[in-house]
Length: 475
Image (tube, rainbow, N blue to C red):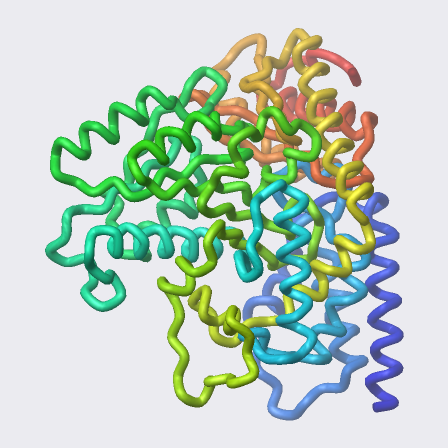
């Protein structure tokens, strides 16, 4: 244990040095050839290695090559910097190493509190047992859609768990054209088939077109299909758009469809702009990711369910060796999803949320949302950028307007060119058929000066790509 104590102290120092020096390092750097070979091609050692030796390797070959999301000038995808409380506490969960399938121990009990906190933050009606932590929103989506599928089957007088889908009318899922790919993956994994996924068009603000949704449902009913679920977005990854949730909820209720909301990234935006999220509280299920806007270390998602008994009907399977006579009426978490052995996700989530407090969470969401809107204002005031979508959450989608050349090709090339420079990091996407740039602000340490650096780096990269003079200075 002396070796462990010494190594643990050294590891803590490496963590503190890494987090404390993030801003002074490049946001991202390519992995050098020798280190790439070590990372990908090393052999399993014949004899065990000492803890100090392992830490040497981590210090020299792992820490120099971060994804970049810990840096205040990382604007890529939807990946947050880790909250320090979550980083500090996570090794203690590993030290306990429990399975949080259920039972009378700290892990599953604390998970009840964390799920209740999350539901309360986003204003989702929560019954005891009405949610569970997952690896991420992808798994949460599988849980929610499987629950919706089972409810639809039972309503029609059959059990999909016993009979499967063969011979039944095709079950149809409706998703926005801007919906996350995890919805399609979940539908495919659940045996629905990609042909039964109906992509609903979006309006000029990239929100689901409710009139088109109504028309598509009517068409499917007339064709003998079985509409069962409509999945709306509360903060898309491309532009942060929030679908008209209340209107979609009304359509779903009118046809007896399950109403699912993908709030993986954006659900917490309700803390900064509640009217934009009106109707989210009407969902039958809501997926969200504490490891996104909250900064809980990856991976921690959450599935929230209006009626927990419906998820239990979709998943509960208790073998004799897991019967727990001391369990309460809610049973075990393992009865509400596909995982049996479940890690202690609640500890780092509890630590992060406790460290921030509700006021701190509101400040974080407000700060990052304001910066996204400030970036949008800079874009609109410039002569060489154009805003591609309204800013609702903390994502700004925009486009560089070159004085000559193919705008799509240049905007498609800019993200890689910016990333290679190492000063800042952003990613690209396509919106309305056009290549665009998107910046997602999630770090509490990002400043207005960092926004100026971002635009300057885009202009510099564009100059390198086109050979044209830089079209403007810092703004």
